[in-house]
Amino acid sequence: MKEIPLTKPNPFAKVVQKKTLGYYLYWGLSWLLAPILFPIRVIIIIFSSVVTTTILKFLTKDIDINKPLHPVKTKLIQKMEYFGGLLYCLGSGRYFIKEINPQLKPDLKTANVCICNHVSSFDPCIFLRLGFQSFVAKEELRKMPVFGICTWAGQGLFVKRDNKQSSEIISKIILDRTSNDIQSFGYPRKYPVLMIFPEGTTVNQTALMPFKKGAFMGGKPVSMISLRYQQKYFDPSDTSSHMVTTQFWPMIGLWQTIEVEYFGDYIPNDQEVADPQLYADNVRNFYSEKLNQQKTDCTLKDKMYYFGKHSDYSICSQYYKDNYGPEVTRKNGYVVQHWKK
View (cartoon, rainbow, N blue to C red):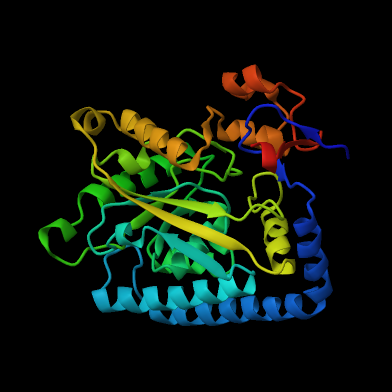
């Protein structure tokens, strides 16, 4: 299929790489070593999945995971999740995780809520390796190896995005956890700090979607974090390909480098506390500037249209209609060029 470069940023399109000498050397060596590295990585992932699942099920046996746990139990679960995340990263070729501004890394004992841009369904595994343990994720990821059981055991939340009632219930729980926990009074927190991806879906590192207001409804400071995946050799995002396909390329490639940058806390003013959507929009402005990514007003329905999950162009956003048109879909070969983003 002929690739058609887009002239405007699109958060869903496949990002294609410039075919440089370094690109060909990387993939030449990768395919040469794949018969050795790939089976080893598969074994590591299977091992991490089996061990993590077995131990976490043992640690959570006969307890109500939706109620506060004893701090010792929470710590044991976090350590096991770290182990699972570490092995899963090694098995998938994500060896190098560089933390930028580590002095601004949130204190997980006192932070209200953490937020981050969302690139891949693999993102939470990166954070498991860094000590985080509780996430808000789509229901479909509940069965994902390592991450699914870790999010459940870490008292994370799964939301059915196409179910309004489910979304409302999760929003109430998020509000309760971000504004009514007791760590600010010097007591051990009742639940692990939540990591929320406010875009609500993955994007391709070239543009940002609108931030949903869930993480901001409590009017508390949010701890801001960003992810940047190495993008010179393949597209790490699962916006325009299946989640399994996205995991295949780093397992074949020699390595992938990921940068995690901490920005510190965003403290809302009175207007932002009174208007959670204004708060969310202003935080997105901050991310847009820091990540050098253009803001778009695309929606999840736009993404599903681009991906081919539905064909009803009429329910796409006005932004998508004004900037792209009905022909801009994955099957028609529309892409973003990495070196021109």
